[in-house]
Structures are given as structure tokens and as C-alpha cells.
Amino acid sequence: MWLFFSRRLRMWLILTVVVPLTTGLLRRVGRMLERRHGPTGVSRALLKAGDVGDRARAWVRGGGRTA
Image (cartoon, rainbow, N blue to C red; front, side, top):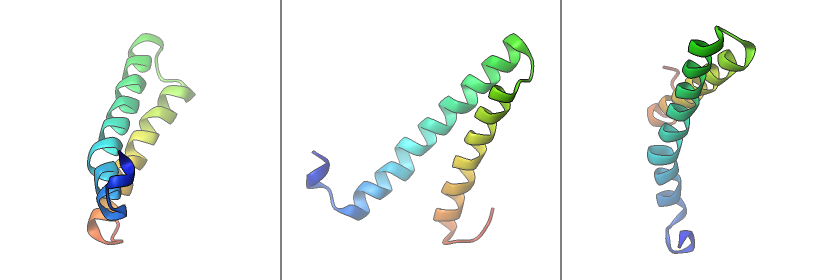
């Protein structure tokens, strides 16, 4: 099915649907781990990964400007 979408449409779908869902999931798992076991390296890494995804989306949306 992906073959029928243009490259630009595929990229738009990934940035507007997949990235927010993934970053939200990473952030949720990181918070859950922090609640259960306190702050650990894994939970901090998951929370940072969620933040990086949000910053990347903002950067792409802003045309290269940092958010």
C-alpha cells in the first residue's frame, strides 16, 4: 500500500502520525518506570527519546529553526 503514496505524502504521514505516537509511547513507558522504580538510566533515556522526537518534529515543521 505504501507504494501507492508519493514520497512527500509518506513523509507527511510518518511525521504527523507515527512520530507523535512513538514519542508518546516512549514517554509513557518512561514515566511508568519512574513511578515503579524511581528515576533510572532507562527511564531517563526513554523520556529523552520522547523529547528528541518532539524537537525533531518541531524542527521539520519550522523549516530548520530550533524550538
